Length: 548
Image (cartoon, rainbow, N blue to C red; front, side):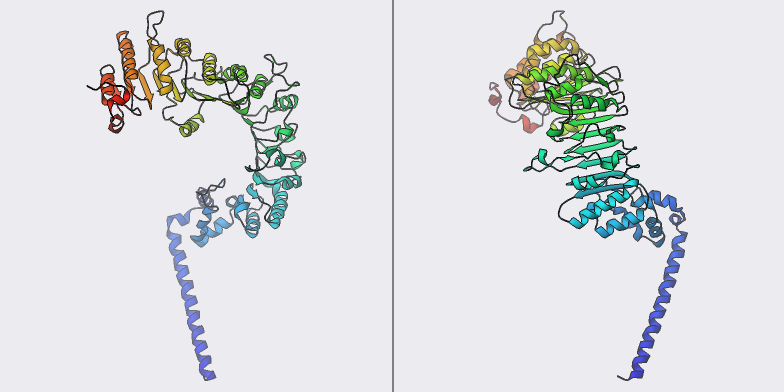
């Protein structure tokens, strides 16, 4: 090819490229002018930053919110990108686990000295990442407000020796492993952590970690959660009480296997020599052996408490340890600080297990039918008390637990009562509690509870008035409407009607049985809510009914 013609071709290409560049600049300028006319482009930068901050920021490892999803705003236009990149508050949430080392460094640089929310899961796979996190945490701890670390981080804690003047929340989690020894691998919070200086720390959560109860980090807390620490470093009763006595601002306390243990030095006594008052505590959740729970509650005075959750592991075959605990649970289940009386109570029992849940709201158990819905509803409960046998109770002990709890609780305002799962109460229990259940208007019963409850209603009271006089709605849950059950129930309801306490609604929607059972009960109760027709199909003789 002729050299001159090649030169001419290159020149023409350059001219065209230059024209394209100019055209692109013109188009870009036109787009900028057009964007400037749009109302959103006239919003001040601080308003845009406020809007950007409303985009979801993941606060945990939830997969439903992609990490740094908000960063899409930087791709909208040049102005938005510049505003976002220079807004320090948008870069304060840092999840080390989901970033490369370079990305971690860049975000820290963009955040500058803004208050940081740092999350990190430490694994031994990358020594470089581990060392980088250790260095950066120590370098930026002065302006870290929220710190959450999980994994094997003992070495990291030992290197965090600078004061943490801005730290508000600290969460440390050692993930459990089914084949590991939790006691051997439990992480110990060193006394040198933050040089013992974190003046703004109000929330501390420890899972699988142990902390000395003399640690200065505990002094100003409003929320303290300790779950499954090492059994080798459990607090003494004296240290535990001494520290709690200085936690006057504590509002939430969750201790799972983290309270002093009953021993020769810490015997449980009905009149302890020393008690500690927690004037601000409103929520207390304790899990331990029944005797350890009793020891803790016996030494605490909780004048502001409005939510108590107790899970007690019974180590006694006759349930003596649970019966020892029940008065202390009842003492804290309701008090003068409560603005409303207990209105709803639910009993959930099975062999070796008894759970009592009580609310101050009426009908709080409306949607509770299984363990999942009960767990959700229990969040708002005034009392959750669960007793579990570790090695086996004597037969019927769960029924004894129910009876003892009901005997100690204030029942005079209860309007809703449920007996679910496999709950059983004796006729004598129902009879003894019935006078204090005079305001009950709705009862839900499973099949194991129907018999004794019916016998209680049938028993003639000494004053001639029907028991549970305000009972207007009865729900039978998954009960087979056999002939004996149906006729017995019909006779009882007829008597109540004659005594001026008729049942208004009988809910049988989850029951099974023949249509004859529904017809018979409908003659006595005006509103019988029938099960679906598929649940009424079947041979009547199967339910003990004679063929007509």
